[in-house]
Amino acid sequence: MANLTRWDPFGEMARFDPFRDMNDYFKGFMLRPVFQGLEAEPEIKLEISETDQAYTVKADVPGVKKEDIQVSIEGNQVSISAEVKQEKEEKEGNKLVRSERYYGKQFRSFSLAHDIDEAKSEAAYNDGVLKLTLPKKAGAETKKLAIK
Image (cartoon, rainbow, N blue to C red; front, top):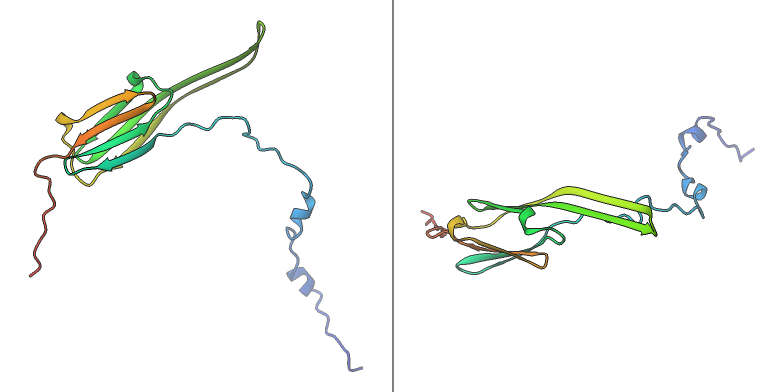
């Protein structure tokens, strides 16, 4: 009788995990992604470079007319917004098979280290790329304080 074991009826319940073998239930069951085949909403991508006099910003805004792009500058804050309109139709003969429309607004805002001279700023849009030339405001140099 040296091999006695104490049995705890509630010990098994404490170790019960209903989700332990959940992966076994779905093994071999292929779930098709719900949004497969749908195009993701485009996003404004930026490339910012700096010289001593100005910033140059290149923003990718493909498929947008230049009339639908707005740029605003307030101090060192630059905001770019674009209204996107995309329509796509697929036909087989005279029968319409699929029609997709996307209308939305994209927005991108960022801060620069120096204030921008709005009066001298320039913008050009060509082949889906918005190019901004943003001169730094005169007298906006960083002042260094001496520690006493």
